[in-house]
Length: 638
Image (spheres, rainbow, N blue to C red):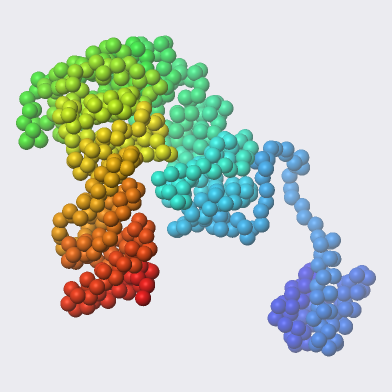
């Protein structure tokens, strides 16, 4: 068959280079001569040889079609005559489950996704997000699934996290959340097509390397999250062969079976570092009375280990923590560190067990725990001062507030209500959160309003407390970024309207604008007039800051909301007060002015502002720039 193969190669070359070379190519002539030997032995080869002779003598216009016909016939012969063999035993094709509704999509449709998952650079995450939102079907293509698995450890952390969540959602029947396109602070849920969980696990375990690094850690984490206890034996096998980082993750997989507890208790004695921390976490989550003696010995020997019992609400454990916490504080209670001006005399909290002990009391509400709080409050003046500028009650506040959002906070609420006003003042933030969720609007105002505010907290502190109340879906909820608390629980009642008077008196305009204090016509007029005065009474300055501009915009919005329509002359007034007001400031102000004051008044205001700059701009540059901006943006029609 070699002469036939050589002939085909020359004909393909001619087809690419051009048929004008047929008569000049001596290699083609030589290949035809060699092939003539075969033509005598086979009728098909004889037909090919005859066609070659015809092609060589034909007109140039006919040679193209003859060449293609000959190539087609040669290909047919080669396909029918060719054979291939592989040494080895013949095995039956294995049966296996598919990844579910797996499909093959046109490559042109998925090529952007493949590129995003197999390359580096910017813009790749947007491609993946777009697929989730607009074409989730494309994620079930087998090439995309393999690319997702291979890119689980993408160098861009957010991309790797998104890939992890996609694979998790596709086999656990759960939505995936992305930030809303129009509201950065809102998350929107998207449903993805489902794939077969067992087959995905098989793909993830395929070529798994226990000695691997970051990429295997990520893969193992996903396997554990999907499989839970189904792969328990495999996790145990990894403990014998896995490298440090992989081993640490493998330990976390043992949390799903109670039968692993004896193994974990033995591991506590041998493990070190993060692996030991993981064992502690599992044993705390699996807490039963049988483990009481173990934990009593652990936290007595090493009080910092109480951090793992943060979510264990056993009464006996709670009482032990109360005793250890009090004992720890007694070490420092008589130390002379009252010199607040000398930070060197303060205690370095990182060298104590104060932080883990403070965190461990979350959700613990036994009589002994409340006695501990009472004792700390009573001895607050003797309590240690820390280099970080906090006292012990500030560390406790975090755990107390989180406890208020537990399933049953009533014992803590009752305890807080039993404290005297001077005691509540020491933990005023905690009491504020408790009261706003449990008191009526009138009761809350009567307790925390101006008349008694100096007992509980200063007005400025109270403003900071209110800053953690946000409106969500028309309801008021508490949040605190620093404490990592975002409970979606509605406060008992909307704020009493009398708070508007308090906020106006103290110029807490950001709070006044945040809450809906609209009442009768008289109330609206008061609020609208307050914001009007906040603009007209602004002090003179050379330029307007970003915060200053935002304050004016907020005031205009509130005036419109309260139907207090005294907008005429406001921007002109600001121009007079701020000699170096920028064109950017003016554009921003006019844009919002048009929304709240209306187009007709905007045109009038624009003429007044332009006239002002025509008269007062000595070199004319600002006047020209302002005029150009007003016309281009549609604020001024000439």
